[in-house]
Length: 116
Image 1 (spheres, rainbow, N blue to C red):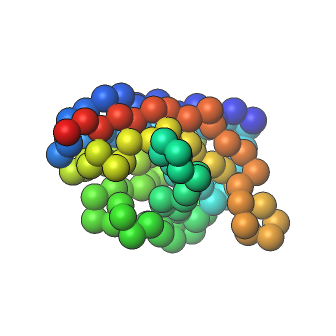
Image 2: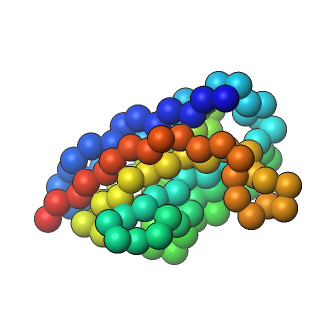
């Protein structure tokens, strides 16, 4: 199993980025997927998820600015109107654990830095 995030970088506040998470070794169409992030000095938090049937959730702070999607073996996150507080390492996660509390597989993360 391999998950690899890409698309991170440095942008100014108000800018946009598109993250991608390419996967291999999983039954992608059958797995719930999610994006997490961990900002400086903060705990990792789930910001968006998309289930195998397409049900989508967003954390309140990103709702209306971020869009999650999935296509074939890749998970995407379009991030618009970025804020300095969006600065974090962003991780993709795949396949919920049996109790539904976490995910089985994780990528290594991609850094997003938003400057004012």
